[in-house]
Image 1 (tube, rainbow, N blue to C red):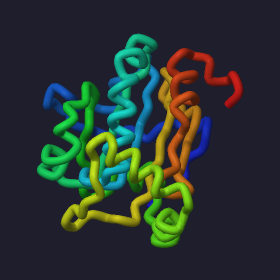
Image 2: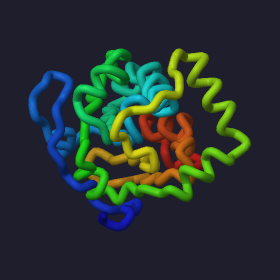
Image 3: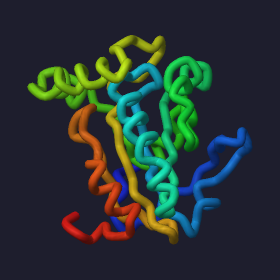
Image 4: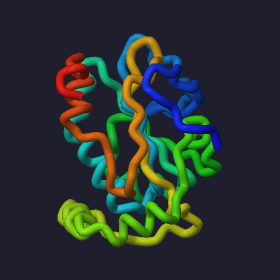
Length: 189
């Protein structure tokens, strides 16, 4: 696995299957801002809740020039069975061999998984996911110790914010993403 990326680094390019079913590259999005989000697995209730949060903001973000790419360490079949039911208006794609995860230094940590289980706030996240219709369930062969990460990439392909989760429930705040989409990311970051 590659080491963590930092703000100011060039975002490593990769190929993914776009919403239209055709291969695309991250570099094809130059000239637009990108939220690149790495999730655990397609059956993860907390991951599905986060995708739902993105869906609810996506129209506004897209109007502000922000594209969203959601990566799951799951096979295509698991994506269609779980995350695919949400019909996200942005690309949600599989990286079952974690090749893109490795390029971005997205970690696997049994310690962080255990810390998430022990964290006092975790039950409220689980309850919020359940209230939205996402229940905790096991995905066969899933890497339960994958830690989420999110990257805000500017129009030139430079990482402005690299956020590596401290816990499985740790993400960039939606307000930070909103500011980035508006072009006011330097206000109170």
